[in-house]
Amino acid sequence: MSKTVDPLQEAERLAAAGNTKAALAQFKAAIDGAPITARARAADMALELGEADQAFALAEEAWRIAPNAPEALLLMGRVAWRVGAVDDSLACLDRIRRGDPLWPLAQAERGAALMAGNKPVEAYTDLRVALRTDPREPALWLALGHVLMSLDRLDEAEDAYRNTNDLDPASVRALAGIADVCLKLGRPDEAIEAGEKALEISGNNPVARTILAHALLAIGRDGEGWAAYEARFDANNIDPRVGAKRRDFDLPIWTGAPLTGKGMLVWGEGSPADEIRFAAVIPEIIRRGTEPLVVECDSRMQTLFERSFNGVTVVARTSPPDDAIGKTQLHFQSAVGSLALHTKIYEDGYQSLSRAYLEADPAKVASWRDRWSSGDERVIGLSWRHPDPGSARRSIPLEAVLDAVAIPGRVVVSLQRGMTAEERDMAADKLLLEPDPDPADVDAMAARIAACDVVVSIDALVAHLSAALGIDTRLLLDSGADARWGLGKARTSWYPTARLYWQDHDGSWRRAVERMKQALDGG
Image (cartoon, rainbow, N blue to C red; front, side):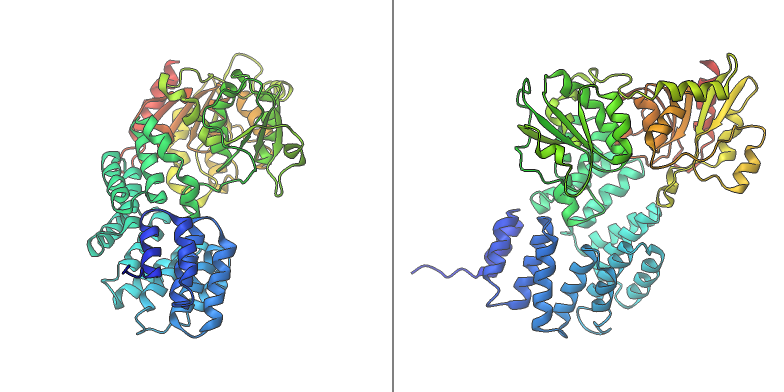
């Protein structure tokens, strides 16, 4: 006589094995016997698959069955902030009373909801209060780690993640958090160790795999790194802070097949800086005989990409997609960040990448150059502060770099957007100050940059534009800069004209600026 299989146990087995689609179906099949628990786990699986609407519908069904049940309120709160309904999430979570066994988990989800609502300081304060009540609840420590990461308090974030791991050694997200913070603190070997342990425990958790990818790329294990980076879309479904959003097109995904005479869509992902960086591989796709080639990108890059990639149809990313995509005969699609893996350009150390693959508007470049320099003066462009307050770690104080750059015989131009009154006073008689560049017009910014002989910048859009234009780029990097630069390296094969100067781990910029100044003075 065959043994009856418990549908919930079978669903959990499938989920643990990474078979998310099958687990979702099995959890749904178990709903009659466990209406709230099965719906909750089905909602988790739907979120992992990027099916937020289905997750929200499952959560709402559970809530309607038992609107006052803490289990249903927790589920609704957990799903709601992930689909953008932060206020609804908080309303549900706040109905779970202190003393209820689910209250600590509700407070952890509440912290995540506040983060989604861009209130990290409030999240930090509330989580600290909750930890005084439940200091041994790993979910609270994990949520605190995420909040501290967003506040750039990396040492404290590591402590929070390690506390989580001590309380729950099987916590994949704690190990992934340790990997992430170790990478940002310049300890890639520890990051890889934690990431690999997370994968071993989970089977193949996409969040852990994506964070591991960054660590592998940082130390030059590029083949493994780019392969692991393919998990970034599934990771984003689980945790919107990790990875990238997938674009859905009804086309086969390109994995390296011959492209001669074949049409392909390449779609952008991530920030404008990401799209510019990954666009370095587009000339290789053109060389492979791709015809036609359509590139979908952030609208801010459209004009610049059209000029730079001759013969390519460039369309702005819209929802629904531009009609030109559907009207073009295409055989494949690829995310722009997947091109490095499938072209295998890393195998020759990225030697096939062009020194300059973007082209600024020549007339605008000449206009800026004439405006700034009437003779043979060397024009230096300077950018020192990241426009996103959440990326303040990348910034360098203007006073720390200004005197190293602004010396007699040079024209130093501010490429900085949003200068403060104090910075303007400090820059008087040392920098040429122009009206702020329009953040929506990347092509205009590219022309300003291309009019410079050298650009000195922190890790921001200006640096990526400058290096992609082939300008001599001196890049001041914080000690925890991400994997795209390769930790501690003086150069990056991705951008041959860039030179890298690293902040000390104690937060001092003095040595980095001095090295940059000596190199700049010498050539």
